[in-house]
Amino acid sequence: MSEDSIISLQNVNKWFGDFQVLKDVNLEVKKKERIVVCGPSGSGKSTMIRCINRLEEHQEGKIVVDGIELTGNLKNIDSVRKEVGMVFQQFNLFPHLSVKENITLAPIWVKKMPKVEAEELAMKQLEIVKIPEQANKFPGQLSGGQQQRVAIARSLAMNPNIMLFDEPTSALDPEMIKEVLDVMVDLAEGGMTMIVVTHEMGFAKTVADRMVFMDEGKIVEEASPDKFFNNPESDRTKLFLSQILHQ
Amino acid sequence: MENNSNIESRKPPVATTGFIGWCRQHLFSNWINSFITILVVYFLYQLIPWFLDWSVFSADFWTNYRGELIVDRTFCSRVADPEGDHGACWAIIIVRFYQFMYGFYPSEQVWRVNLTYFLLVVALLPLLIEKIPGRKHLIKFTIAFPVVAFILLYGGFGFQIIPTNKWGGLLVTLVLGVFGIAIAFPLGILLALGRRSELPIISMFCTLFIEFIRGVPLITLLFFGMVMLPLFLPEGLNLDGLVRVLVAVTLFQAAYMAEVIRGGLQAIPRGQYEAAQSVGLSYWQMNRKIILPQAIRISIPSIVNTSIGLFKDTTLVIIIGLLDLLGIGRGALADATWMGLSNEVYVFVALVFFIFTFSMSRYSLYLEKKLKTGINMGAD
Image 1 (tube, rainbow over the protein chains, first blue to last red):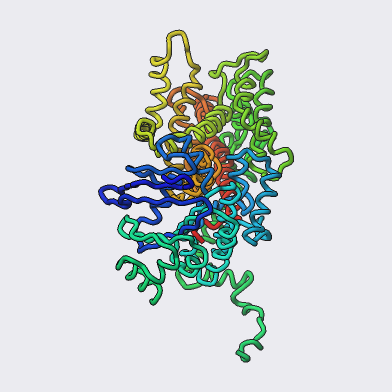
Image 2 (image 1 turned 30 degrees about the vertical axis):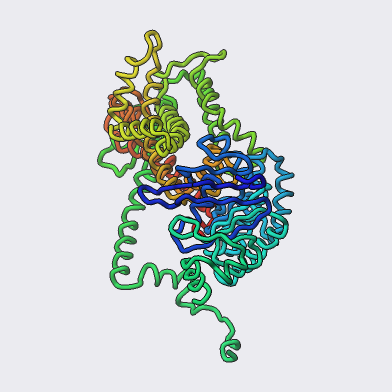
């Protein structure tokens, strides 16, 4: 593990039953680095980032996040989850709470923040994702793009050092993808450490410091966007790129 | 499209809206429906006036058709004048009203029961009315209510102790129903969570408990509470009869409640758990703030359904000698002075039960409606 890594995966292996989803995955992420992970479906990219905040448990290898090793130790898991924010493909907003309550819930209950302060924080986050006027609505009343932006605000309210995005735009109608990506670009420019699983190659080209290509549970290729898109090494990467770029 | 933009919206055709339109659509849409409508209307036309006449217009209340005060069955108009056209004789209910309400609770202490009833209403207020002022403090009272009610009804702390074998009628029905439901609800939640626990010992214990209790008829549990529970208790500790029954009723209800809530829990998408975990909520915070509110919301109809079921099943305590509302009614019928008035007694008991169960059912509808606001449970 190199000195300045904030996330480090070393020889991580994981199985679902007999099926091996992660095979000897090694990944080092530096502070403020933006990683875009892509690959065909079933390649283990979601599983990999879900291991980073322990939504999935890895069976072999070592995962260290901001100096904390992820083991069965519940205290460690709690500390890591406070460091890491996550945005899901299906938004996963809490439908019985208003937008504002969705955002203030964790600061109030996990960080024991006073309610007034948490609400101010929520409004600030909503301004960052550009929908302060939706604060008192319920998730069901928002469009998909707005819901996903609320989900981002909800994660940011915990002031994480790292943000994980698990296909954040895959469930969105095409005209809403941009509004979400814009927020993510802002976030990247603000210096957030990000790991993004996405097939939005335009986003990857503008934002990513490094591209990671996965297939069948393995990291096949790791390269700068420039090299990745223009001069990929592996044939598998070439095939994948040709399929998603020229469909 | 220029053509379309000029079309102004107009009112719908008269025949499809309003009262006439509604009748056409819902009552007379084809000849089968028309036939059924007419049949039902005829049936109601026969039934309602007859019942109103029997229960109100031709009925005796305090006095009979000769104007005499009714003190036993022979004074009832329909007994005294069998040839005449007389209705119900409600005097049996009126004369025995105290028993129907309180059983054999000493009358100089009965204010304690009335006060408990009143406090029950106060305790229910914050649950019924969301925007009531001071709801937070009222909720605290609601939580403390069982203890307050117990002290008021049973005694201690300066109150004269009224042993539960003096309790009866609606008091016993309500004690079993309200306490049974109120204690079983949190217990059921814990059992439901326990059954889904990742710790095998907890989940096994909860599953065994639920399956055992559900697999046994309530009557068996009541006998169990009556006869066998004392054997398990340390010597010298003699649990009150009503408490033993209450334990049986509560465990029974908790098992059913657990399964109903588990059904709700299963409907919550995995993403809700993951989102809650990823923002750092603990297991209990996640369940309390995210999972249970949604799961319980989904299960409201079934929760109320089993609660109504339990409320009515409390009448089974009659077989182990407790006199609930129905028990008092049967006692009145067994009394030679009032024999033969079973119609009145059963109609009255049915009416009281109906008032309570129907209110519960209305409350559940109100809750469902209230909680639906702005909620879209789907992904989008």
